Length: 507
Image (tube, rainbow, N blue to C red; front, top):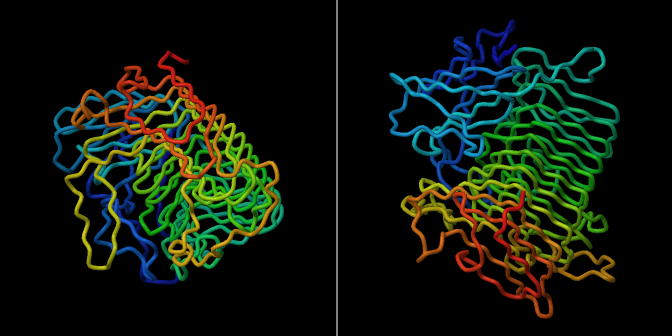
């Protein structure tokens, strides 16, 4: 059985009917039946700046397309691409989705649920294919907020203890979700939440002045499943000082505004993000510590079976705000990184925390020659000028450069000194017992090498006196299937006491 989203406005009080735009770039057929292809906006290129008091201009963006399919069986997809192209790319590459193209029709089989991207020559004007299991509501009366088929405009939804939100697959909801000091809350369904009606009014990302798609403070026992989140005004999905939260098969996409991080986990514990698609303009999944909650460690966090795409910033990140005593028991596993931003696997200890017991396992990272380099916009009239520079993100980076510089504190309106916390026994800004296991890199052969070395940088650097990293383990790093070791890896190492780099096959 399969079905798909159809966003239609059933209006009765106005002659003005809202029509969700249909893509002009693609037609899509599932098992022979044509389904609607919708649009979303993404960054045209990685060009960023600190919030200047107004939102990012539209001429730095472009439209892409998506379909939302719900199925419990293998399905045949046929795509007609209306854009001229030479090559079809179906991502993640690790899924090895083979296709045929005849007379302009691209055909392939999806044997299982998952999140896929079809590209014609490059990521520009791509097609996202979300193929999810059904998430149903058996009892409408049991749900606090029930959004059935159609267009809804509730604005900011504030959840309290034991409340829930259900979004039907045919529901397009213009609004956001907020909760504070709430327990046992749930958001589920196969429909779409869109935050494009919200305006950003302040520089702060920590406060509730601007909500984003989801913002939870001090909540416990949270479940978010199946829902699509589009076009946030700021950080997209946020948990501040939350405990026991699970995000399963969410889709974060259409993010192009300043500071649109994908998922921010702040001073929280027992958090899981799994089976999800996160395409952010800024950092993709980042684990932070801030003054307000600095007494609470970040621990027991799992990121698993996700497809990640970072336009600017870091993809799988710890930091750069690390205002707490410790980060520990954190795992990134079985993830595909379609685009790595500045760094794919990043630990940035900008403040006090000791970071330990971190595992990156079975991570696939794609380096594409058509991905262009990030550039900072220093003024309103400056244009992006890196179209011919290939993006070469760090594959692995560990650093402890200071976050609270006077300039940064002024930009973000934060105090120069961190709120005092008990740091007895903490190895401040030290990383140890960090393991990278089975890291697989797809390296486009059009990307130039540096001598005999693949241009896949690895940086381990401590800039603080008397702080050394130790027990750093790199167990099986491959580029295009070839094991690499210290002799052919592009490595910079400073302030590392002990490191284990093995090119053996760890499976």
